[in-house]
Image (tube, rainbow, N blue to C red; front, side, top):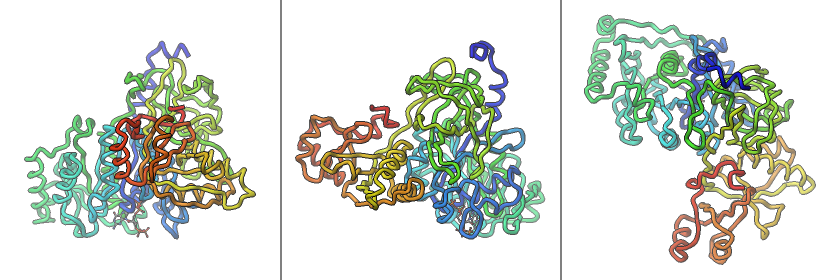
Length: 540
Ligand code: G4P
């Protein structure tokens, strides 16, 4: 270990500089799976599109591997996919694709260095788009915006830019500008080179399309008014300062914009180039005290996702670790910061959808799946040498609550084990009360879809089908044992103990919470989101 500390590790620095770690995020149906597939195709990680797309009737996408996801054609679990483009190593960290605001997505966003926000040209900014933009802003995460489905009729490009600026506060700085309206898409004007990149339909998106670049004069001759309009609009944007600026992009106040038709492979190549040229490489990350551990020092990383039963033949616990510094070498013994205990990394893997392969080395920015990692929880740090603890991942306040029971009482052991495991993975928050008894814990989720994940995993992974009973609560606050006694006497309020020992008071509505606060102004009622509480152990 000491040798690694003493010599500045040039290999680590250069590998870190070559990494781009990002996630594609969007409101469902904007084309995330399609774009993921197209990115991989362009990077030649796969040879034919369609081999990875997950909609009904096709084979599952590389990121869709659970039976449930395949049945529904949505991606609920997350995996990381690595491929090379030019001399750059791209780590695409997959996010859940369902319509809910999910904690999982936010954890993934803590593990990446940039986000690609996909917007459907005909819909503009949707509910989930807005939530995701806000989270990226809170985290200071640079965002590249891609306006997709430009081959179909949609809003005007200028309207979309106004919407982004007015509703997110981010200044859009288009890198390309569409020639022809949505639905009559001719191609894009490259605002840097002033070339025209022609849109050619690739039938079925089956192969990598070859982009045709034309100089401005040829484009003007061929496209006439459509080109002139695009050039004028681009100048108008420039006059308003909407030009890409690397420092404001990295600071998270401007967002470069591209136009694409992912299903026809258009714009994908441009996105890869932007990732390589402008997205930040893996850099020193602040630890929980704000100090930045240099990337070229000893290994460190943190767990951003824990999962079990990832495939029928591998019923195991996998902890996904984002490498923050140093070289990861399979077999190395690292320290688990939460317990101070050694952790052996004999089983380290990389995932490509359902396939996994053993990896021997990983560098800052990479994602490593550690197998048999039941001791590791979301948010835990691992390190070699000098101790480091990365900031705890934010915990979100649940807004949906259900009582859960085993549908078959003879399966009680499986039921207990399953609920415990899903709690451990951070899939759901588990609460209990003496009144309700141990057989009927209460589950809290940020979005209701999370309950479907629980239902599916309980039946398929743990062999215990369950029944739910909805509870009429919408708000949770952390309280103290003394205040719990006061709160329990209130109507439409219930106090429960979360599995980590935290007392949570549940209120039927925000209004009810306000009324109780007015009646008892001294009560301790903390918002979970404000407490910095992360994995349950943070409070234990
Ligand atoms: P998601 O992962 O964000 O939920 O979206 P997904 O890629 O599954 O795409 C949603 C739908 O939008 C799909 O159509 C997909 O083909 C279509 N789509 C994606 N990109 C484009 C694009 O650039 N242009 C057009 N016109 N359509 C696009 P679907 O009918 O739901 O499924 P499928 O039968 O086409 O697979």
